[in-house]
Length: 270
Image (cartoon, rainbow, N blue to C red; front, top):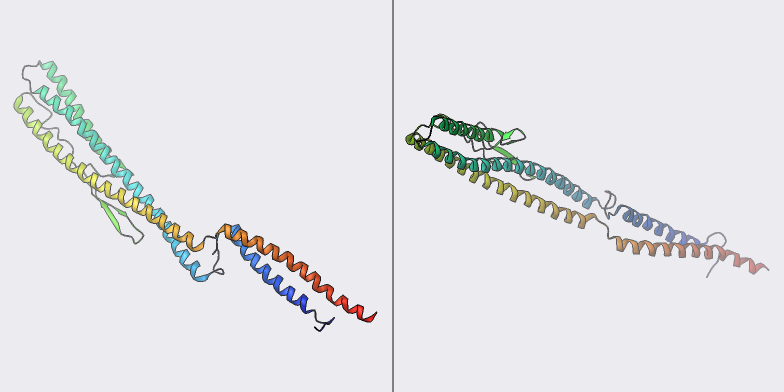
């Protein structure tokens, strides 16, 4: 083997391997510190582009989940108000039956009628107050609500039920059984409309809840897919880093040995 003081082949090879080892260490250290196998476009351009799109979808799903949650609350408020009204109607019916008794005194009739008027006012108040974020899905005067349901901008509709106030005309002056019968008919019609409204709201609310769960599961699936694309295997990277550190130490030692090689040529001149 030829030896030269001008060209140290061993040292040159040692430098080459040290540079290569150092470059690999930078890559592995970045993966360990960031937790990502693909953190920049320089790591893997195509995978980075796909991951960017998936991150955008995840943000979209998060926004949709918030919109659906708000819609769920609005529908739940309307359902709660409807259920409260339904229970109050039972008290109203009982009061009408009391007023149907023609034998009660004028003072008692006045008291019962005042109670009835108060309960009718409560029912109408519940209808007007069944709103969330200035949207009333139960009472009259509202409109259907469209909620974005997916990242393709598709939507679902929560129907406004437009339940009219309980009319006080027939209920305002019950003096005999005939008046009571007419009042009970009014209550029955109102109750039928209310039951239909609650059924519709319940169906719409169930649909919104199902869509919200679907969006949640889809977002979780996309997150798992994103992780599979860009996340680093930290156990693997840790082992690789330790291996590279050992190789770096050996490379430094080999450089020292290579740099000592020309000194052996001095022995030839003694």
